[in-house]
Length: 299
Image (cartoon, rainbow, N blue to C red; front, side):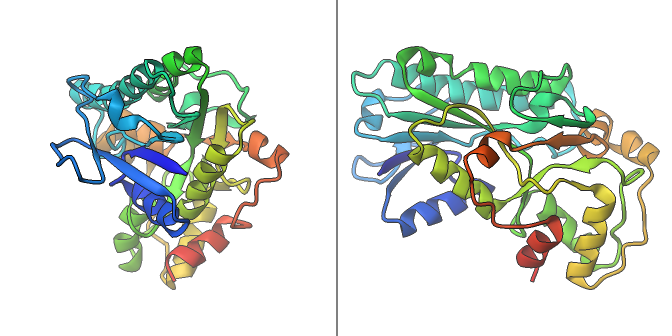
């Protein structure tokens, strides 16, 4: 299997490249720099809209994981534009390019997020056919998925992986939590009752692999573990995994004051995403609950 990966240096991308390499797949990362002709990478510039379609000849699949981090600080107008453009520009360029090819890749796999359903649908289950929300992240996810239209119109199979919180000790939300929690400074956020839809990084890699190989899978797929948890249960499970107390709650008003809309939507939002598509297909999730997953990642 020959696969091109955009966002190969990120949290999921690095694990994906390692996993595909272990399967002896030929994996080619897309990089934002010039590369030698013999180098095992493809040079591109999403901001400038430059990508030579000849570099993608012979690829079986293209995976797009690119996007600026959404939890890097307050969502200023400049930061919001970067979050949106970094996703739409990359997906759009890839799909416009492969749509011009005589023999395009069979499948385009693009990251998306459960933010599609809005920051706070609450207790209401959100399977893949749930309506989109009406806030910033839902607009980003909708534009991100719409950017793949040229590939769909070409007849290429397109899968949008709406990921939840990706758990890994090597980065992401969990990676940022480990230092304060190890120092005994962890605690629930706000009420602690907000729902967290999550997936282990290794589970996410398996979902991407599955999406590449499942010829009849297309459209939106919720990439989340079925065992949704609350922030309170997650906090206690992480404390137990680290053997540390979790007695320092962070009031909701402080999160709103310090982080604005980002704190409100990401840390206090509540989403019960349901992996209906994957469950219906019998996908083998690796973890029975969040305590199981956290015990694995921080041991």
